[in-house]
Image 1 (cartoon, one colour):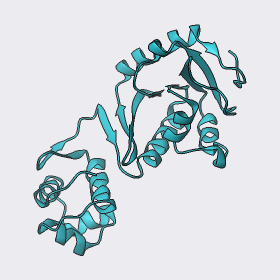
Image 2 (image 1 turned 120 degrees about the vertical axis):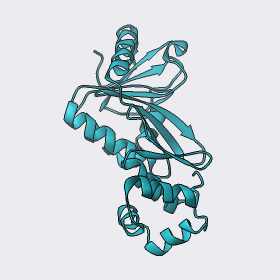
Image 3 (image 1 turned 45 degrees about the vertical axis):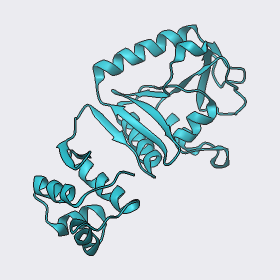
Length: 221
């Protein structure tokens, strides 16, 4: 988690016209903690994460070394200990509203499941929630195993060098690159560009057409 300086918090409040009390209310962080941070007391973890989330929700972001800027509407970075939760709920909201399919390119079935926070113990409940609103398609490299039973997902395999290096989700008018992070699990770089997403989806579908269904895949079409 990045370090936040007292000057950055003050600058963000000034930009938004917030008092310390309003920042406290928006973040759920106690007013005494806000005051300590603004006098130079360094905090990390969930406290700074909550402040970053509240500031980013208002369209700002903290930048190195000690700055604040208006965040681009085209690119969103989701990070932190609850990044998987935030990304999953955001993707679910998008497919509820826009329907269509969720297309993904992953190195393995396990990566697909873990990047949205589900596993066998939960019987892939999150995949079921997504599948209620959208077909889920996943391209795997031809070296990957299809040993997991995931009936909500249609898997196909294709030559490894055609998939690319970055795990990717394509959904609605957005696409997201999944960045595994040893310290925090995952980061997600979400692109809010219908033109760019259209190109990604067209590329995915061209690969999908020539890919081979996995043995045991729920759908062979």
